[in-house]
Length: 140
Image (cartoon, rainbow, N blue to C red; front, side, top):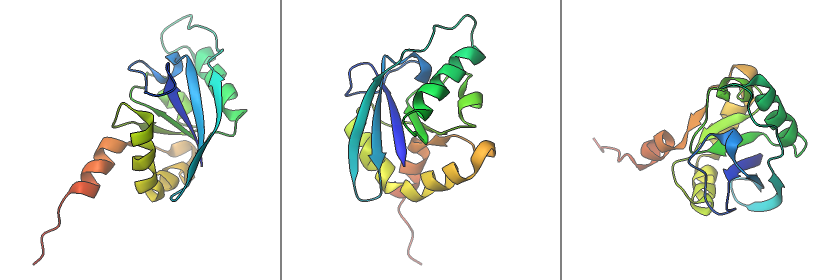
């Protein structure tokens, strides 16, 4: 799967909406491996109005040109409803990208399942997945 990480410094996620990032780090990630395949500048137009559909379309076109399947950020705005139809939107649970890659790999099956839901998919919150993975089981 191909992931786009919203960043300004190429190391950490931004604390603004996904579409407001200066750059998108593009990674190919599997359960066992990952590699960065591109770093692209966000060249989309500024919003003319809040939740501008033209802005969402620009982001979709930019990322689809790199075959992105998943959009990852700490924050998404109202346009998540539009871009979630094209990508599995994932709300990051940590600030730094390398830590998040490990979490994505640990939850790869759930993320892949979300992607395969198509246009009706819901976003994925990694914080919830982390808690599920860390919850101890009671042995009866």
